[in-house]
Image (cartoon, rainbow, N blue to C red; front, side, top):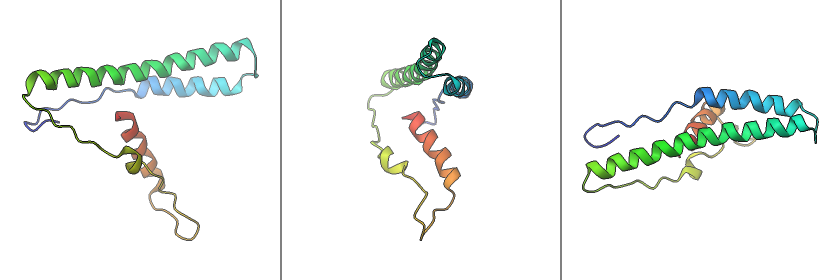
Length: 112
């Protein structure tokens, strides 16, 4: 979102990720070293690459639109590694909202 409330929504990658998850399960069932396993592995890599390319294309288009519209662009350098830490905690002090934090971490890492 820009200062004048112009929003650049991230692309929806739920469907390709669901397909990749299904392909991952199929790959796990294959016998190691089989030709079918190799085919499934290549298919999974292609699906994962497609999601990554979609995100990369969105970033490029957004940056290009911002560069063409604004005279100055400031980018915040976020510490994503610190933001996406585990919420599990320790046996003495267990964490809270672990599942919610896992979903938030996934979204933060997806946007990049």
